[in-house]
Length: 475
Image (cartoon, rainbow, N blue to C red; front, top):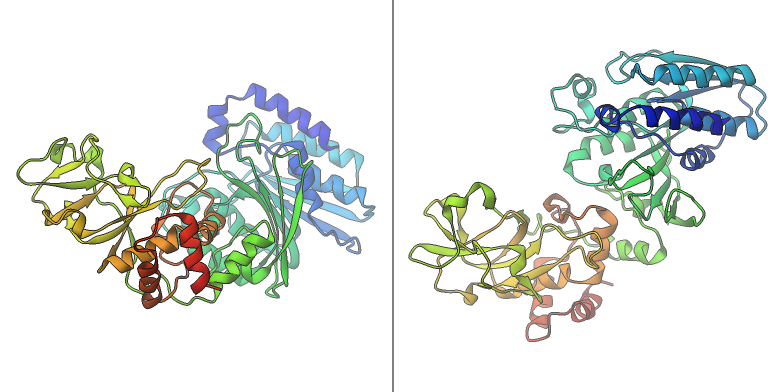
């Protein structure tokens, strides 16, 4: 059944230009991924009728997968399938595939050629919802965004709007399975959505792919993609099942039962832990009640966007120039400047381009995916260059302002440790170090951080030494 739908989908993909499908955010689900998603549902075979919703049906791959699964486990009742799809190019293929399902099994179906998000909700509920929603950013004033203002913050992405609306029509106690990016798991941008999600549902299963470019084969989708299953209930389970595989072939699936309160934190961030070591790291930090924001030492983003401020950048020092720090200046735990780099001086009297020359911890804002550490930082002390009243930082650098050297060293101990790098990698799958996430992570009180700093001063600024100090203070 599913294989036949997949064949018609392949024919459509070959016929339709990728640029045209991209306009809709279309990335069709591979066969093995569709089967895996369908396998996650706990099907209640005692129901006389099962109502299924496919929120962005495409050619019907996921619809066929779940119908096939329900029939294979021996369900003899009636299946009613509702598919939303408003791409006129796809609808004829979807219709052909659903006719095939109807002819061979006890199902009925509806194709709703409507915009799923802007169509007013009907008085209906579904037992199972499956979806591969479109991945596409839209404007905050677009009709789709305005249709769900309670989950939007800024310019949203279609995928979580599809998810939010689907939750509203999911029957209490029943399940939804979606394949989506992992970007919703943290950050302020998705905070309203996460609040809505966890007010109505619980997570029960997450599947991770180790290779982000193999999920949608041939599509060059570089989003880090995950599969999630939720249940519409407020009763939290004790654990969440987290599985992972190297590719979408699912031949090497590993499984881990993670404590629910470790995966879903008090601030409603979702930590994608894959083993006991990662869960233990989160548990260690869960007892800390402070954050960089609460101790008044938040991380901020560098202020100079160099390609927009060429007129104030200089290659050589002169009267009125100040140091401009880039990520390249972060070396071996310290900030080394100058290094003979282009544009490492700034010449300006504009106060908005300058910062007080004091003590800082600088953190690289971007790192490569394959790099061993996500958090890479270096200490800058006012005493390094006391001849300057001001310094400045380029936009690809983050910084934490510290009133004394001991605090700068202490912050370095935290962020250069294996514990905090592990924490951040679990929290954020991207290569960007986000200030909102850093500023909400748990840290010791200021006095403890200063004490850590005093211990590392005079020692080599290695990850190993940071780990030894962390182990004394965070148990």
